[in-house]
Length: 418
Image 1 (tube, rainbow, N blue to C red):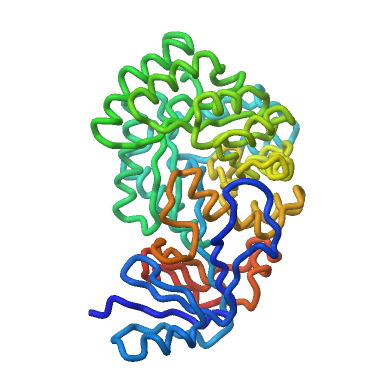
Image 2 (image 1 turned 45 degrees about the vertical axis):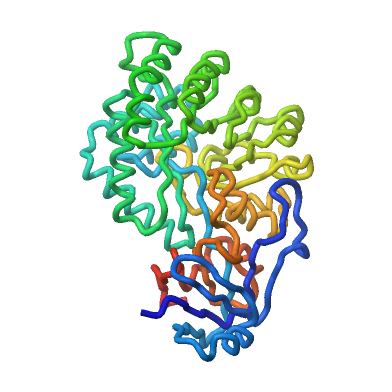
């Protein structure tokens, strides 16, 4: 069996190589190879060069050649570093009530909000949760995303958080994309827990964390720091316990009020996500740390609140990733490219900054350094568009769909209509 494959020619290969992890990026800094091709060795990239050079170099070897008869552009496949695609039910009523002027408290009192999803997710069977994850993961794959973070957080008990994480692991067996599980048991304090917020976190830390380690269900612990969720003081103790067991930390921070990003920096979290309420103080704090700032424009579009101050974060020298936050409540769209394109318009982000935010910088938000770039030794995870310029992708705001998606050196999705 031939292990080497040449694919091309591409009008452009946007490698995303040679760029900084932090700070602003100009479009002219992008490394774009024209009339290009690449060589794949099993699951990884062996070489990138002009297509003709590669064909000449490997002419005497047995090699598969995938040759395009139309103009195409190739980029590293996209990475969605923050989703909640393990859930059951719908919150369409919440959305309608918000648009009609109802407050978060009004919606919660009427039976909506996060607790509505918790109830439906608890009632769902393991099979139903697995099927839901796989359906949503496939939709993301077809938009060019081959690595997807998936949170628990709608279980809110040891039993039901384990069911969610079991569903995520079971879904990994059938999903083409890589699914990265995260435990968000500290989403809110469940209504049916007989104790205060501190007691609930101690219960999760003492009863759930050891099982997560023993069964290797996740390496990541998340928490929602907010007035209606958990305050920074008790979350710090929770994070201390998690880090003592070897878990990475990520934080739902500064969505409606500040404080979460400070805790993220204090605990050297991998990422601080949301940040819609961040002020210059929080922006500078994050920029002077190793924490990746993750903008979630889907939540802004779902809730009608401010966008993450992405421009200011980049200008301050911070690292910015962009993720979909696909969830049934505040972020039901789940379309990363559309959301990122809209964020770029409102925050004046360069195309290079957006592409970085959904490739190698998003990979860094998951501590994955084998993807997000096109270069020797990197995973052959690719997204291919039938167009003559990479700039067309964001210009069409999600309406230009991938022609092909490659995962681990294999074409796993092909759209003959584009």
